[in-house]
Length: 142
Image (cartoon, rainbow, N blue to C red):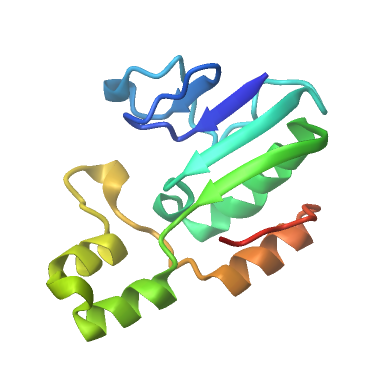
């Protein structure tokens, strides 16, 4: 079984697509930032969170990652993507590819609705340390 947490409009085949925003028509509406995941311990093979965690207040992250760690099988995988703000800020400063507005929107979020606002800054070194603290290992940054 595989979960796609905070799927938005990015639905993945073969996954249970989960979002708090019913407008995205997910398979399951669940506010996993304030509720436990519905699955038993070590019952999930894979969890994806693509450009989701930066939209959730940092004080909610411990519960989220503790829950993901709880439901993931031993040797299960977590795939996490987020804008690395250190890189984005550098690109914004340098006007990388002549698209300074893109990098600004990447850092701030599109903010067309409540769910698109970025609520915390993410950088690889802090994410890695945080994941280790919550029991994840074999962490690869790409």
